[in-house]
Image: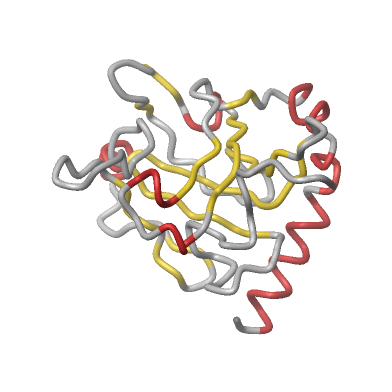
Amino acid sequence: MTDDTETMIEELRAAMQRFEDVNVALAEGYMPDPSGECVKAGEHGLPAELGHMGIHYLRPDLLGLTTTEPRVDGSGTHTDFRNPAILLYEPQADGSMVLVGIENLVFARAWQEAGNAEPPNFLGRRWDYMAEDPAIPGDQAHGFEPHYDQHVWFRNNPGGNLEPFNPAVSCDLRST
């Protein structure tokens, strides 16, 4: 990880400190992903050793959500990490949540309709493209229409703090 990346992640972590209290996130318009899923790579047709994402808290307005059935879709092209569309929480055994990262997501069709020929990028990294592949068990797009997303981990990720999954994040409830 470059010094610029580390500096930006620390700046974002400091800017998101208020969301360490999930009630602040709720008061500011974030809502738990309606599926309630704590996302694990192994349950989405990917190698389990990639790790987990945690529970997503979404800002429907920033995502531009237009429908949730049969898949979540929207018009969102929001890419500002200082005001992320998604907060990532790790559930704890006592019922509390620990903020472990943030994410932005743009729907591929909306991104292209806005005149973008290339995926968004952050700190020189192209965002991940996510779409369900019926040939692979599990839903790689987590119930969403095809989209680009970018995660920023506040908990050190051995694979890189901008990767989609983090083996240092657990969906297996643990004591704090």
